[in-house]
Image (cartoon, rainbow, N blue to C red; front, side, top):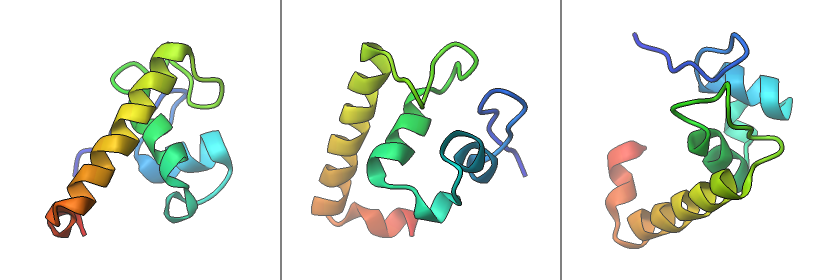
Length: 79
């Protein structure tokens, strides 16, 4: 299994969630999860805790697109 590198020695969504937000991945809000996704592919440069305007904009786009996926019934593909 491949794990995504989320910076600071964290591999995988669970490790990133605990490191950045101090809670399990299943407890992340949509906005927090989007911020984690937004710092990829360069988590050593970008921050999920103190997002730059670029990361905040990317996270906002991710939230909007996830709403479209749910609206169109495509979220069954990722459950």
